[in-house]
Image (cartoon, rainbow, N blue to C red; front, side, top):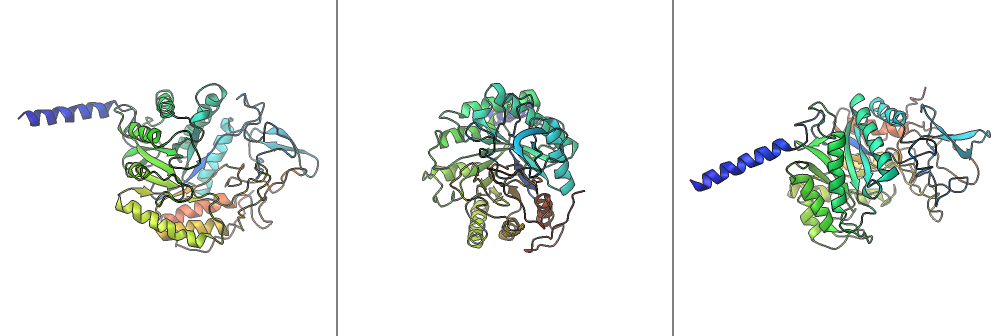
Length: 421
């Protein structure tokens, strides 16, 4: 009898606790499965945009001028409502313009493109070392708030990805504090059952990236585990599904992974495993890599965890790291990108993560890129002459249709269609 009373009380306490959680019961997007989501940095600034960050993420070593920039792809800004004159010049001598992520109009345009090309949504990146106070928090909160509005307006899925890079020891308390701040101030996941926050397994999905890498980070698995336990179990702010971003060789403790077996225990706790592939292979080496994805998926099925591989259109960070070759991993008219998309689906992937929507720093962006970038001391990657500037938006939309079997599976990259008016 006492055991029955105790069980009833425990159930009541759980019910009360669940009722206190600050999340809507459901969402218009109930699962990551069948979706192609992209990472969204949203970290670019211009001196006059009101954020007080100067040329943030466009500059290199404190300078932004010909010969000094972090950007390898120059964005096409012809459709942006607000643009800013840069120190760079085009071939005809006119000023080269840029956009700011801080402007709501920039975010609105990006989500409009997502709807136009059939891209399901984005994970808004949030670097915990950048959002504790001051201009960094002001900017990131503004970008996230604008993204929430635009996601609802254009009916795109949205979630948050905490990037732990740069976090110190004990930084889990900062993540927890920030999550509470966002839930209370923005109602991230409590906007009604028709909200567009991405849910998974019946719970709002939150991503935590940067766990298990062996690159001498100041935090470790202990901090990651406390974050995971909070997001999943806290009676008020928890009850979430968790996606964990891990190294490429997480399963067999390979070259980029720390050798602590407790990593696999953490992975069995989460809902989705997301390994990072950018820079790990080029087009010629990808076929051998495809087998790894299949083995990853088999491990995940054994432990009832879902899996989302990374796909990326190309890679270049020469302007950021001059010793690296420019166009280090060529796009090759979309063949490299599509080979990964088709390979992941063929291996059994039922969701995809695109790196990235707007990462022009490292040349992985799928947004519209300039066919006429600045000239002079800095050089920029451009698409081939017969490839339109929106090709990678188009291919990403095609990937979603193929993933959901709305069109037949094909390993042949879809031919370009010039959508530019």
